[in-house]
Image 1 (tube, rainbow, N blue to C red):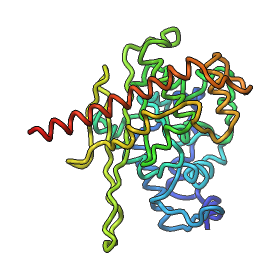
Image 2: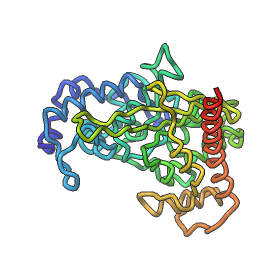
Image 3: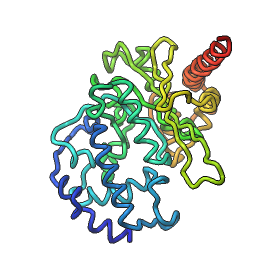
Amino acid sequence: SGEKFQERVADTAFGKRHATVMPIADTAMRGITLEQILELQDFMQESLRKHDLVDKSRGSTRWEDLTMYQVRDHFVKPLTQKNQCSLVELMSTAKQPPMWMISHWWGTPFPLTVRMLQLQARSRHSQTAALVSYWFDAFANNQWNMEEVDEADVLRFPFARAMLGQSCMGTVLLCDPEVTALLRTWCVFEAHVTQQLRCGALADRCDRKRYFLDILAPVISPKDEASERPDKVTITMLQDAIGGSWNEVSDTEGVFFPLGVAHVGVGVDVTQAEASEESDHRMILNFLTQGVACKDPPPSAHPKYDELNGFVHNVFASAELYRVASERRGSCL
């Protein structure tokens, strides 16, 4: 059962291999490499084959549907319970400055998350993809002590400090088929920080001449009703080429970034995005408008909302126009 597995997880080969804590005081320096993510993936897949991990609300946990909430509850917290630390501090031997910051919705299936990161790493760092490091909140934060995410200055949150760090090249926005990430307040705020870094508005906090935004999304081709094979999933990416230009990348020839994602992006409204905690939503909107992350009721309308909405809309409008233009060029051949 799940409870018995959680009690014994430290006695697994993976648990014994990663039993020694390497303290990394600065949470922003707790990047996790693609190689480490793949090792964790193998461990979780093997565990789910051997054990029936049951959620009270969802029933038996299936690898294909495994969310970050389940990754945290079934794996991250049991592995780190004894030492009350982050998972990265168990898997690393030194601090690992992140090269990219992941912006995502925790409900996205973890197998899709891993495949999206694999494509992004191969595309950006073909020869050293395994060593690419990501700031991945579930693994970087100490899930037993979240005091660091209670700062009045949201730009002092670990994810923001990771983005401001000299090692960080950009943000990787991971989308599920419904593009839920763009409907979450924290992800929209991460887009705001991305925009500020790209336009130089945070020059007083970091010296950054270039900051990328790569957007990835799966394209799911439903199986034939008569087939027992699973749906075919292709991972696609809009790779930021700076200046409103994008490179299309896909792990399947002839399958392109879904226009549906771009359509949703063009309609994002930060005031309508949702957070698990209403206080977080208020805090972010107040920071955007007043520069202070208080939990009082925020303004219902403000030029800063329009500015952030405009950035997100322009990013996806550029992507949408690029796709339309590409399709038209193809039809003229």
